[in-house]
Length: 139
Image (cartoon, rainbow, N blue to C red; front, side, top):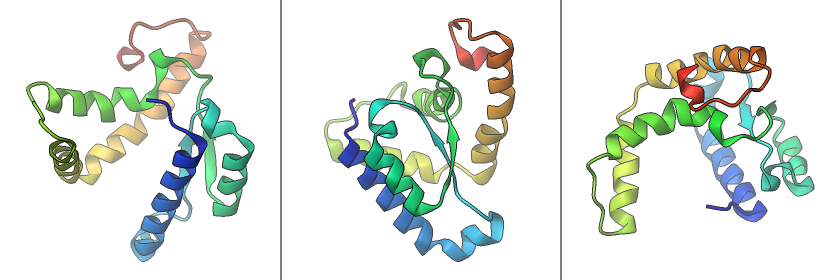
């Protein structure tokens, strides 16, 4: 699915509003928002960069684009794929309901694990001199 600049910025606006609504809880745990940001075309556009500057979020750059090393594929989407294996949906609403339920079922330790494995994966990728991997998740 191709993500347009407008949609990407709209998603960031919604995320920013949601974080502000939960601000007291977030501030207790974190002093800033760090966004893992890939270098796909809509994400590096001037309009997007300008909007991110207004949010004052720290932007953690993604490794140069390569579909075989997307960090989100290793934890979040791989786990979601296992959950989806035997699912069949008949409408968009069913899909949305399943995703909402799946996300709600994940506790903070699941999220922390996904975040904590990123530096190790990146270090292994850098040490490999950017060689192709059949699966970045198996590093």
